[in-house]
Amino acid sequence: MDPKALLDHQFTVAAYALTWAIQLGYLIILGLRWRAQKRADARAHRRPR
Amino acid sequence: MKKFAIGFYALLTAALLAWGFYQALYAAPDEQTMHEAQRIFYYHVPSAMVAFLFFAISLAGSIGFLSLCRDRPEQALAADAWALAAAEVGVVFCSVVLVTGPLWGRRAWGVWWTWDPRLTTTLVLWLIYVSYLLLRRFAAGPQVRTLAAVLNIFGALDVPLVYMSNRWWRGAHPGPVFGGGADSGITDPAMLRAFAWNILAWLAWGLLLLVLRYQLERQQQKFAARQAQEAIEA
Image (cartoon, rainbow over all chains, first blue to last red; front, side, top):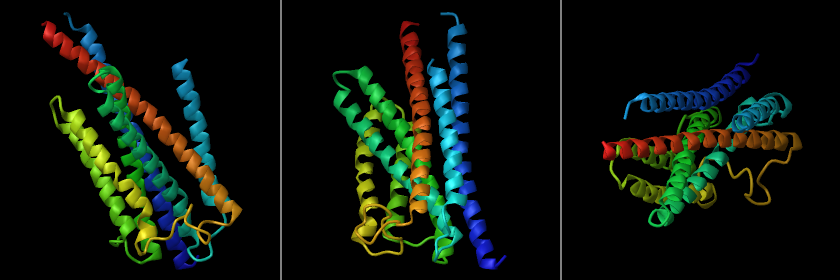
């Protein structure tokens, strides 16, 4: 494979991989925040008034 | 029923993203000058379009909050939740733009970054919305929502500047892909298809994130209101 085409390929793969890493990373953060909120809700419900 | 609808929509979005990925990497033909590196555009341009749309939604939410906060506080809180959720998802997409752009630039121009008007205004836009999110995260007090809404309205003024920057000022950034005049845009139908599918797929993904983030914000608002009520009663 010619070196220029190989570099083009590597940069394209990097761009796609980083896009997915950012988007899925945000989804994971959102999931963790959901879970923390659910736990806080459950704790508040258990607490005697 | 609501969970089922969100699950079904998530599946549909995953299928669209997979199809968009196939279109971008395998179905679209090689561009003659940029060759494979041009395929970065199939993620870069739709991400920019979705970021602009979400900053516009965030602007609408902030205007809604400011206009409703005196008379209808409950609706104002919902508008504020839309503003915050859209700004956050918009920042995620804008981050993708700022990461994929330099990767393409390194291959096309030989440099990672240049202070071209389009690049500079996009970076400023990202910084404004990151500062909006930091304000929301770390500032406390009853006026935070109002201050954040005002910042959002002024920050959104940068969106048309970013959009018009490669029309108004000369720079290294390529010309507009869509709506740039007679000689602009893509003529190859297979490339257009790849663009269209990726715009649709990333828009669907962005809307999914937006709805999830909005629901989380509403839950947090209700939780905070309950806590405040309990503190008053105690």
